Length: 303
Ligand code: CIZ
Ligand code: SF4
Image (cartoon, rainbow, N blue to C red; front, side, top):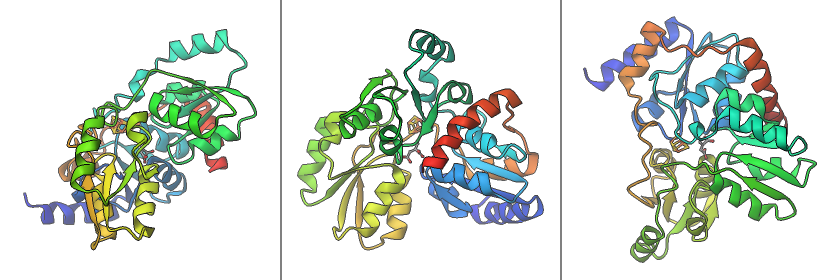
């Protein structure tokens, strides 16, 4: 079936079922084009919280759909592809966190939004890559455990030297695999380019950056920059929005490895099927939802 036909079906179904489509910046371009909102996980959770529609199609990975459910408990939240998960989110076990808390009752725990609802429920506050530094600065404790991304954790530690950040050993399998040799090679090809790098990349890659930020911050930086060539050190999906919003500027991916297989699982057909079948609904127990909500609510209050 051609894309136009599916797109028309999606539009009709969306209206008929009173649904909204929220898509992450890493989704395939076709999905970004039909989505009502495209953004990072912070923006998607804020939009979920204020959505008027009865059904929210969260085109992204599992933890994002869970965040939407936590913030919009009365809505039907559908994740179009059931096994679209985030390997980094799976690098924290709730039992490990509980053990840490038992041994360190006075150390606050900050979790990256890329975590399960169970993990959020055990943490004091949540953050995304766009607000992590601010949130950590504002926590009245000079020792903080940050889970799960060690690279984002090291970035925060550099920005907030007055605090001791205890790191977890998690990482994003996509950003973590970028090599310094790739950075060097692409620098030789485009010596004039600005390097915009995500803090999930390793510190030696971050050291090459002209700017370090979340996907939305990278897009904002490129939109307002006078430069015309950029090397983008985050998942390739972001290049779609960058090129759309800046047709006269040139964007290159830092590495061919910057493709998240999980983020690429969802197709237009999956979105259409989610609207037709209303399957893969996210459900959470009330107890879990309420506990995880505290961590997310504190983040939104500080953002
Ligand atoms: O917070 C998000 O949406 C992620 C996972 C990446 C980013 O920097 O936007
Ligand atoms: Fe998880 Fe990395 Fe994929 Fe984002 S890009 S969903 S952090 S594996």
